[in-house]
Amino acid sequence: MTSHAVRDLAARLPPSVGTRALQTDIRFVEFFGLPGVGKTTASSLLANGLRRCGPLVGDVRMAWGTRTFISRQIYRVGIVAPRIKDREFRLLLMRIARFVLESGQSSIADAVRVIWNMWVLVAFVQSERPRQNAIVIMDQGLLQGFWSIFLKSKRRATSERWVDILSDIGVDDMLFLHLRAETGVARDRLLKRGDQSSRMQRASPGRDLDLWSAADRTCHELTADLEKEMGTEDHVGVLASVDVERLASPEDVAERALETVLLACLERHRPCDSADR
Figure 1 (cartoon, helix red, strand yellow):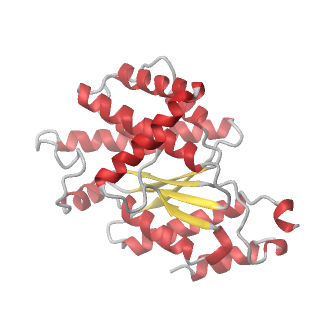
Figure 2: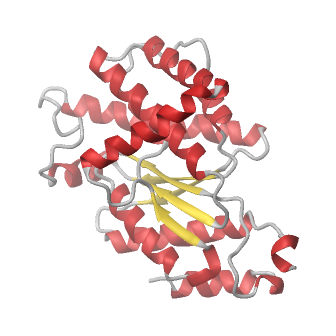
Figure 3: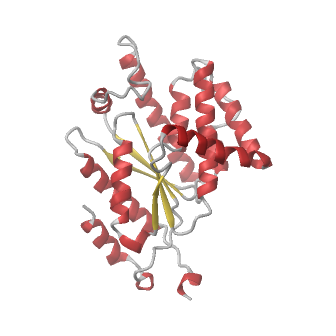
């Protein structure tokens, strides 16, 4: 699956890179898109594809690994709690909580869930950011977290913009990979799953189409806001997209994602004198 993309990348690499890891500013690859579009499957296949690149991209890790549900919750508490002592981290948490509450969630339970999810994501990014020559693949990241907030929000007018919070979290080392699909494609794929893990699966028949329309609209609004912000600021990450057609296999989607990630890494390549010494 990776041969064409790797050959194309290798042909464009500076001769000094050789066989060591490509020095790139990209540290996180976040998948974003409608439920059912294949984010989790594509992220796993992408990680395998990047690993087959050998030392070129360094260490490739999946967010949360293979932890069970209970161990994952313990891990989440373990990365959030120690950072509470940091004033800047606490300020970010308070801003997120205020933003969620001002957006007007459908219920207190929804508000608590999305607040906690965002807090965990911020803590996870901060804990992983110091790693060198490592790329972390996330099937549910910060952009998907904001999507969850907006999906059932009652108010869009808040005291600050969501992109400002995202910018202060720090996204210059992130690649946001939007898996774009028609709502019918995503809906059909999601309904074939029997795990009931998404709120879209639990929607009442009368609200199903309205919710999918809102979900699709929210995806477009978030990517448009982020693209606009990236056009006015330097070093605010990379936003890319991969189209998911109805007949596209998970392997097809993952191959396009792999090429996108490798090309982004190449564009964000930076010489590293210390590694050459």
